[in-house]
Length: 258
Image 1: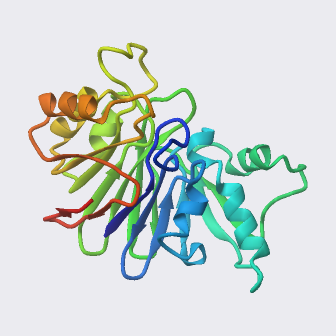
Image 2: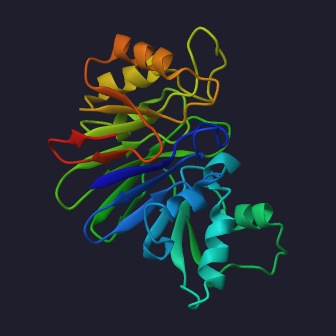
């Protein structure tokens, strides 16, 4: 599998790029993890949005799903003709949330563009040659971690937004790459049950035995070096920080590029 970072800024789009959005692809399947502000335009720098097989939303906070309306417009009004519906998986009601973002009335179902499906911790879905398992996260709204296994055996875990919890450890267990949020700095941010510090992200990666850790969802005011140093105090494996356009090849013996 290949992971491409479309956007990775936490809580909003930032001066260097879009909010959360990641392409996960194999030779035959392409999915999106999250679709935050600014990501729809940046996505077009990497792929044709019409090639996407499904969208998986970690949760329904706006910084992870706002550009679903841009995707809806693209799929409905493309001059060459409508593209038809694709599955959209999320905890909570994705249809209602999309209406809220778009400001559309209750009779708008988006059925020509999306097939909304609710998932919960413990569910497993199959999209093309990918198997996706969902695990608990800790966040103010329903949120999930995802564990994606490709046909070649590589495993990618994605935290979504979360604080430390056993669901995250389970999702990242022996993963070849753990893409984990680290929005908070330990000496600055003491509130709990919202986000991870670099240190808590590193602790999860260490307890899970993840082979590589990639920190993401850094807010514009979060220092990448600070959270990287915190992670390395807890985790002895390779640590990288996601950047827009960065790519990672997820295999049983992964190579990392940025």
